[in-house]
Amino acid sequence: MTYLKLARAVMKFDLSSIPSGVTIIGATLEIYKYGNYSGYTKSDVYEVYKATKEWDENGASWIKSTSSVNWDIYGGDYESTALSSFSYSGSYNGWFDFSVTSAIKDFIDNPSINYGLIVLVPGGVDSVNDNQTKDQETYFHSSEASDESLRPKLTVTYDPGTSTMQNDIKIVIPENCKVTIINMQGRKVASFMLNDIKQLNQMKASLSSGIHILNITTPEKKVVRKVWFVR
Image: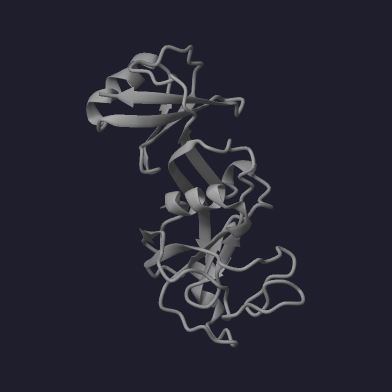
Protein backbone atom coordinates (compact mmCIF):
# COMPACT_ATOMS: atom_id res chain seq x y z
CA MET A 1 0.00 0.00 0.00
CA THR A 2 1.19 3.55 -0.71
CA TYR A 3 -0.22 7.01 -0.29
CA LEU A 4 0.33 9.29 -3.25
CA LYS A 5 2.90 11.58 -1.65
CA LEU A 6 3.45 10.53 1.95
CA ALA A 7 4.03 6.80 2.01
CA ARG A 8 6.32 4.53 0.03
CA ALA A 9 6.69 0.91 -1.03
CA VAL A 10 10.08 -0.50 0.03
CA MET A 11 11.39 -3.85 -1.20
CA LYS A 12 14.61 -5.84 -1.37
CA PHE A 13 15.54 -8.93 -3.41
CA ASP A 14 18.11 -11.64 -2.78
CA LEU A 15 20.64 -11.50 -5.65
CA SER A 16 22.99 -14.18 -4.36
CA SER A 17 21.98 -16.66 -7.06
CA ILE A 18 23.42 -14.44 -9.81
CA PRO A 19 27.01 -15.53 -10.54
CA SER A 20 29.74 -12.98 -9.97
CA GLY A 21 31.52 -11.61 -13.01
CA VAL A 22 28.58 -11.90 -15.41
CA THR A 23 27.51 -9.01 -17.64
CA ILE A 24 24.13 -7.63 -16.56
CA ILE A 25 22.03 -6.95 -19.65
CA GLY A 26 18.98 -5.55 -17.88
CA ALA A 27 16.74 -5.71 -14.84
CA THR A 28 13.03 -4.99 -14.51
CA LEU A 29 10.99 -4.52 -11.33
CA GLU A 30 7.27 -5.34 -11.56
CA ILE A 31 4.66 -4.60 -8.89
CA TYR A 32 0.94 -5.26 -9.21
CA LYS A 33 -1.62 -2.53 -8.47
CA TYR A 34 -4.98 -3.99 -7.49
CA GLY A 35 -6.99 -0.96 -6.48
CA ASN A 36 -7.48 2.41 -4.85
CA TYR A 37 -9.36 3.40 -1.75
CA SER A 38 -13.06 3.99 -2.42
CA GLY A 39 -12.73 4.29 -6.21
CA TYR A 40 -10.06 7.03 -6.26
CA THR A 41 -9.14 7.56 -9.94
CA LYS A 42 -6.50 10.29 -10.18
CA SER A 43 -3.71 9.60 -12.69
CA ASP A 44 -0.13 9.71 -11.43
CA VAL A 45 3.51 8.98 -12.16
CA TYR A 46 5.37 6.57 -9.88
CA GLU A 47 9.16 6.52 -9.66
CA VAL A 48 11.64 3.98 -8.29
CA TYR A 49 14.86 4.86 -6.45
CA LYS A 50 17.78 3.06 -4.81
CA ALA A 51 17.36 2.96 -1.05
CA THR A 52 20.43 4.16 0.86
CA LYS A 53 19.85 2.88 4.39
CA GLU A 54 19.32 -0.52 5.96
CA TRP A 55 15.72 -1.23 6.97
CA ASP A 56 13.73 -4.04 8.51
CA GLU A 57 10.49 -5.40 7.09
CA ASN A 58 8.85 -5.71 10.50
CA GLY A 59 10.10 -2.42 11.94
CA ALA A 60 10.03 0.01 9.00
CA SER A 61 7.47 2.82 9.08
CA TRP A 62 7.18 6.40 7.87
CA ILE A 63 9.49 7.49 10.70
CA LYS A 64 11.61 4.41 11.44
CA SER A 65 13.83 2.23 9.27
CA THR A 66 13.91 -0.42 12.02
CA SER A 67 12.10 -0.71 15.32
CA SER A 68 14.93 1.21 17.04
CA VAL A 69 16.45 3.44 14.31
CA ASN A 70 14.87 6.38 12.48
CA TRP A 71 15.24 7.15 8.82
CA ASP A 72 17.51 10.16 8.23
CA ILE A 73 14.62 11.64 6.23
CA TYR A 74 11.01 10.78 7.08
CA GLY A 75 9.55 8.40 4.55
CA GLY A 76 12.83 6.65 3.74
CA ASP A 77 16.36 7.41 2.56
CA TYR A 78 17.03 7.13 -1.17
CA GLU A 79 19.20 8.54 -3.93
CA SER A 80 18.18 11.84 -5.49
CA THR A 81 17.89 10.54 -9.07
CA ALA A 82 15.09 8.18 -10.07
CA LEU A 83 16.00 4.95 -11.84
CA SER A 84 12.84 5.04 -13.96
CA SER A 85 9.13 5.86 -13.81
CA PHE A 86 5.70 4.47 -14.67
CA SER A 87 2.67 6.58 -15.61
CA TYR A 88 -0.86 5.31 -15.13
CA SER A 89 -4.51 6.28 -15.20
CA GLY A 90 -6.21 6.05 -11.82
CA SER A 91 -8.67 3.46 -13.16
CA TYR A 92 -5.85 1.13 -14.21
CA ASN A 93 -5.18 -2.06 -12.25
CA GLY A 94 -2.31 -4.29 -13.32
CA TRP A 95 1.47 -4.48 -13.50
CA PHE A 96 3.71 -1.46 -13.07
CA ASP A 97 7.15 -2.12 -14.57
CA PHE A 98 10.34 -0.17 -13.92
CA SER A 99 13.83 -0.49 -15.38
CA VAL A 100 16.28 -0.89 -12.48
CA THR A 101 19.32 -2.10 -14.40
CA SER A 102 21.87 0.34 -12.99
CA ALA A 103 20.83 -0.38 -9.39
CA ILE A 104 21.08 -4.15 -9.82
CA LYS A 105 24.51 -3.80 -11.42
CA ASP A 106 25.64 -1.79 -8.39
CA PHE A 107 24.10 -4.29 -5.94
CA ILE A 108 25.80 -7.24 -7.61
CA ASP A 109 29.17 -5.48 -7.82
CA ASN A 110 28.90 -4.38 -4.17
CA PRO A 111 26.35 -6.45 -2.19
CA SER A 112 26.95 -4.39 0.97
CA ILE A 113 25.04 -1.44 -0.57
CA ASN A 114 21.98 -3.50 -1.48
CA TYR A 115 19.41 -1.71 0.66
CA GLY A 116 16.70 -2.40 -1.89
CA LEU A 117 14.37 -0.13 -3.82
CA ILE A 118 11.75 2.50 -2.92
CA VAL A 119 8.71 3.23 -5.10
CA LEU A 120 6.92 6.54 -4.62
CA VAL A 121 5.07 9.44 -6.22
CA PRO A 122 7.55 12.35 -6.51
CA GLY A 123 6.91 15.77 -5.02
CA GLY A 124 5.79 14.76 -1.56
CA VAL A 125 6.78 16.53 1.64
CA ASP A 126 9.23 14.67 3.89
CA SER A 127 7.21 15.41 6.99
CA VAL A 128 6.74 13.54 10.25
CA ASN A 129 2.99 13.87 9.81
CA ASP A 130 1.15 11.90 7.16
CA ASN A 131 -1.75 14.30 6.65
CA GLN A 132 -3.24 12.92 3.47
CA THR A 133 -6.60 11.21 3.57
CA LYS A 134 -7.40 7.54 2.94
CA ASP A 135 -9.11 8.34 -0.37
CA GLN A 136 -5.65 8.93 -1.83
CA GLU A 137 -4.37 5.43 -1.14
CA THR A 138 -3.13 3.15 -3.91
CA TYR A 139 -2.83 -0.59 -3.23
CA PHE A 140 -0.09 -2.95 -4.44
CA HIS A 141 0.33 -6.65 -3.73
CA SER A 142 3.23 -7.40 -1.40
CA SER A 143 5.47 -10.44 -0.89
CA GLU A 144 2.73 -11.89 1.33
CA ALA A 145 0.05 -11.90 -1.41
CA SER A 146 -1.92 -15.16 -1.35
CA ASP A 147 -1.56 -15.41 -5.14
CA GLU A 148 2.20 -15.87 -5.56
CA SER A 149 2.04 -14.87 -9.23
CA LEU A 150 1.03 -11.31 -8.19
CA ARG A 151 3.86 -10.70 -5.74
CA PRO A 152 6.60 -8.17 -6.64
CA LYS A 153 8.98 -9.52 -9.27
CA LEU A 154 12.54 -8.72 -10.23
CA THR A 155 13.70 -10.08 -13.58
CA VAL A 156 17.47 -9.89 -14.13
CA THR A 157 18.92 -10.84 -17.50
CA TYR A 158 22.62 -11.38 -17.93
CA ASP A 159 25.19 -12.79 -20.33
CA PRO A 160 26.73 -15.88 -18.68
CA GLY A 161 29.71 -15.71 -21.02
CA THR A 162 28.77 -18.88 -22.91
CA SER A 163 27.70 -19.44 -26.50
CA THR A 164 24.01 -19.91 -25.79
CA MET A 165 22.71 -17.24 -28.16
CA GLN A 166 20.29 -18.48 -30.79
CA ASN A 167 18.88 -17.02 -34.00
CA ASP A 168 15.91 -19.39 -33.95
CA ILE A 169 14.30 -20.97 -30.92
CA LYS A 170 14.08 -24.75 -31.29
CA ILE A 171 12.27 -26.14 -28.26
CA VAL A 172 9.04 -28.01 -27.64
CA ILE A 173 6.28 -25.61 -26.59
CA PRO A 174 3.32 -27.06 -24.67
CA GLU A 175 -0.06 -25.41 -25.05
CA ASN A 176 -0.90 -22.15 -23.29
CA CYS A 177 2.62 -21.02 -22.48
CA LYS A 178 3.22 -17.39 -21.55
CA VAL A 179 6.20 -15.77 -23.29
CA THR A 180 7.84 -12.56 -22.09
CA ILE A 181 10.57 -10.94 -24.23
CA ILE A 182 13.05 -8.58 -22.55
CA ASN A 183 15.52 -6.38 -24.46
CA MET A 184 19.10 -5.40 -23.63
CA GLN A 185 17.91 -2.44 -21.53
CA GLY A 186 15.90 -4.75 -19.30
CA ARG A 187 12.57 -3.52 -20.68
CA LYS A 188 9.72 -5.90 -21.41
CA VAL A 189 9.00 -5.53 -25.15
CA ALA A 190 6.37 -8.27 -25.54
CA SER A 191 4.24 -10.58 -23.43
CA PHE A 192 1.74 -13.02 -24.92
CA MET A 193 0.30 -16.52 -24.80
CA LEU A 194 1.96 -18.95 -27.21
CA ASN A 195 0.92 -22.28 -28.71
CA ASP A 196 3.10 -22.49 -31.85
CA ILE A 197 6.88 -22.00 -31.91
CA LYS A 198 6.60 -20.61 -35.45
CA GLN A 199 4.73 -17.64 -34.03
CA LEU A 200 7.74 -16.83 -31.87
CA ASN A 201 10.32 -17.05 -34.63
CA GLN A 202 8.13 -14.87 -36.86
CA MET A 203 8.37 -12.10 -34.27
CA LYS A 204 12.03 -11.45 -35.10
CA ALA A 205 11.04 -8.95 -37.79
CA SER A 206 9.40 -6.72 -35.18
CA LEU A 207 12.34 -6.75 -32.74
CA SER A 208 15.43 -4.56 -32.79
CA SER A 209 18.82 -6.16 -33.38
CA GLY A 210 20.68 -7.46 -30.35
CA ILE A 211 20.30 -9.81 -27.43
CA HIS A 212 16.87 -10.61 -26.06
CA ILE A 213 15.88 -12.80 -23.12
CA LEU A 214 12.86 -15.07 -23.47
CA ASN A 215 11.08 -16.21 -20.33
CA ILE A 216 8.71 -19.05 -21.26
CA THR A 217 6.33 -20.00 -18.45
CA THR A 218 4.50 -23.30 -18.77
CA PRO A 219 1.01 -23.95 -17.33
CA GLU A 220 2.79 -25.74 -14.46
CA LYS A 221 4.63 -22.46 -13.67
CA LYS A 222 7.97 -23.87 -14.83
CA VAL A 223 10.10 -21.13 -16.39
CA VAL A 224 12.40 -21.82 -19.34
CA ARG A 225 14.83 -18.98 -20.05
CA LYS A 226 16.52 -18.59 -23.42
CA VAL A 227 19.00 -16.06 -24.75
CA TRP A 228 17.91 -14.98 -28.24
CA PHE A 229 20.14 -13.08 -30.62
CA VAL A 230 18.28 -11.09 -33.28
CA ARG A 231 20.22 -9.85 -36.28
